[in-house]
Amino acid sequence: MERVFTELTPECEITARMYAQGYEKKEIANLKCRAVSTINNQLQKAFEILHVRNGRELATMLYERITGLKFTMDFSPTIKSSIACCLLFVFSLSLYHEQDEMRRGRRTKIERIEKTRRSGWI
Image 1: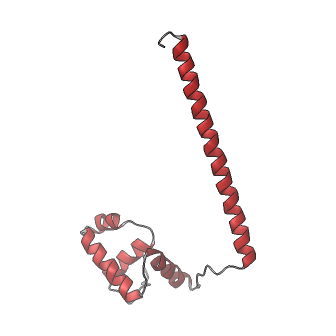
Image 2: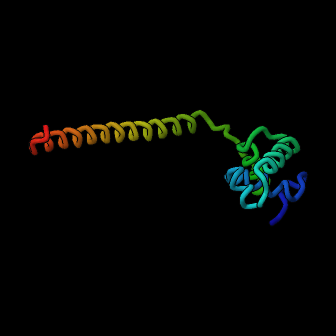
């Protein structure tokens, strides 16, 4: 594995890379046979040295260093509008699906009650 965060110690770099790749602190601790507090300390030191505030910034830095490309969320207004429309469409579909599930659940409950009444329990 080629070093990416050369400012860090090799042990600290491994922890930072795992965290940037999506591993939870507890998972990293288990995989490295370390205490979670050790992992927290390593990450805190990595954030300080690399001048990042959180895991998202760490992941962005890792991506940029590996690919050599600057990752930016600075999209044109047209792209932003297109993304907003797509997200709105997906949100609308999920709401429709959720309402449909609720209706289906109500029908099932009513059918159960009617079946119980017919059988003489109520």
